[in-house]
Length: 556
Image (tube, rainbow, N blue to C red):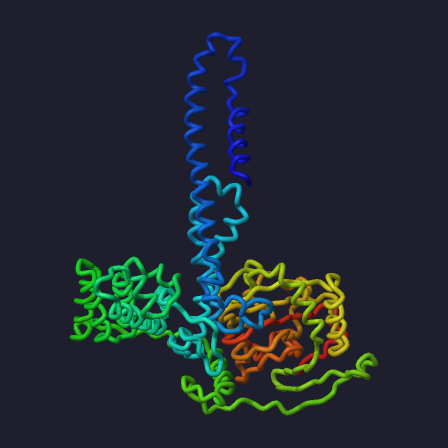
């Protein structure tokens, strides 16, 4: 809004609210209110003046931010990421872009949030408030990939994962932020690795700094070939950041039971911050640990890894063996080979001319794969429909559908009446399976973000879900449709037996969730492995038991 117009409207606003000004001139006894009115107007004018100045400061801040566009912050490489999601497949690129956007706009958001002018810019403020959530989720995604697949922090930092190379590289600030995030969520191995990388960079910057220059930004930019954004972050004092890294890092090493490393880092931090009482206490504690006076069981993130992560890791080993990627130990356990393939028409005249390409993966649980189930044009329709309304995915719980830390994706739902393609998919499923889709859940379309995954779960409901879940009966069968290929990771892992299915664009998995007596098939427990490289899109159609009574081929 034009500032002059905004000021004019605000100036007019107080008058209708001053009800005691009514009829002052007709009663002498009310003339005393004139003094109150004068005082009120003066205070409001002073306040208004401050608001206008704050608003002007905000405009100046926004203009300053715009003077350094995101393309410049990203070292002129923004054109590499425009036009197609295919250019945003590498997790390092994804993280760097999200964090640069946050780091650019967060000062503006904080300024607006503290200003009454923010009332006129609510939509902008709300959008900016989501930035830290996005940046935090991106860092958590990197940490999930680190933990699940054992990919070293140095590979993410340099953007090198097997044969996949990112266009961007992480800055020193990125390393410090991810290390801090790992510290906060107790991922001690990752915490140690990322802080060590940050320390190496900061030490190199300080060693190469000119003796007659106190401006660390110049040394940082020249010695490490970082852009001005990196330099501006570090120009306060690189030594302080190094001390911070030592301090956080020593605690991670302490939790891992690496006492000699922890002591060395704590002493280095004390040289930079000699008055830090917490560090002094920890030095004494570490010495007690080393002397055996105090016992502590070392903590490792691997102690708490879910079973499905081993399957996810093994599935990636197969993809990376040909790339000589040494960071993944090869498991001796081999995966079951898919053997039964045929053209399936289900005795349905509509499928005689173009039968489904069916591959039977397992007999127990019964699991089959339909190749070329969707056309590329149908996939494009689903993505186009979904993008505007994508929102954080939820899971069925005791209180209805709720958010959960085991699922990291965004999704949208579509009824058969929403689009001809959605209706066509339901009809096709009915022809292939003989199962009615009239009472099925709406088609869910989901997109996974940085390190996106879905922990081990069942599609059928049990005692742990709300009664409303069973309105149309339990989920009798699942159709999981892949809307994209995924270069690395993103497998669908089944825990019993241990197999992983690689996403194939246009293909679909089908399985039954219930036994003859209506109880759940426990062998259908499955998970979506974290996506390493690629963009994963899927669609789910969950078929309900009601309406299937005379057509459902019950499992024995």
